Structure formats: structure tokens, C-alpha cells
Length: 172
Image (tube, rainbow, N blue to C red):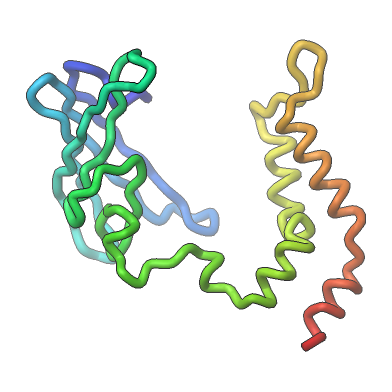
């Protein structure tokens, strides 16, 4: 559903899962008019209820074709395209001084292993995407770039010897 319709109030509920189980939902109400542009969030996180508003800022497109909507972070005041759920609140990534990307929390050795053998560990995800319901393997008789990329990753997986991974894990 398109929530961002000009001069309309729209809304809905978005659900998310963790490890295959329903872990939460959020009710959103979007108001976009000439005077007001905002989103009202209503959700529960870690047994605490939240209900607050985030304003939207519109900026003319550099292509002169309409406007681009940005979130205005309530904590930093920064205009952004993505908000992250941190400590139960949606905010810009710089609102957390000690915030890190998930790869930054992994050891250098693990990152080295992932760089060399990452496709081996992602094998199930690759197959799931390749055989998902609406995945297009070809367009106009030619294989799609996405399909070719996944096939190349699977070829990399076939080249990996599990003994190499074991040796790398056991080495200093």
C-alpha cells in the first residue's frame, strides 16, 4: 500500500517477525497536505507502549519532477531517508553515540572468514531468493542480472571445501 499520497490521510498496520515468529506490529497514520506532513506511530516495544509523531520534510527533486519526502528525526533534527529502531524509538543512526553496524561487532577473523566464504554461509538465503514466488529468472529471453549474480554466488559455494573453513577456524 502506498502510504504517501498527496492531500490524503492514509494508514495501516505493519507486522514484523524475528526468527520466523511474529515479534511486533506498528500502526501508522500518514497525513500529507500542503500545511502538514507527518506520520503518527502507535506500537509496543519491550512491553512499553509508544505513541508519537515524526514530521516529514519535502524537498524538490533535482530532476524537477515532484518532491522527495524525508523524515525529520525527533532526537537529532537531522533530515534522513531511514530511521532505525533503537531502544524502542525510531531515530537517525547518529542519535546513538555508540551505535555500530552489525559487522563492526564481529571479530576481524570472522570478517575474514565471511569475506572468503560468505556465500557458503548464505547458501540457504540464495536458494530461497532464487526460488521465491515472484523472482524473474529471465526478461525478454535474456537472464536477469540478479539471476546471474545468484548463479555466480552458487558457483562460488560449490568451490568451497568445508575442510578449508575448519582449518581457518582452527588456525591462529
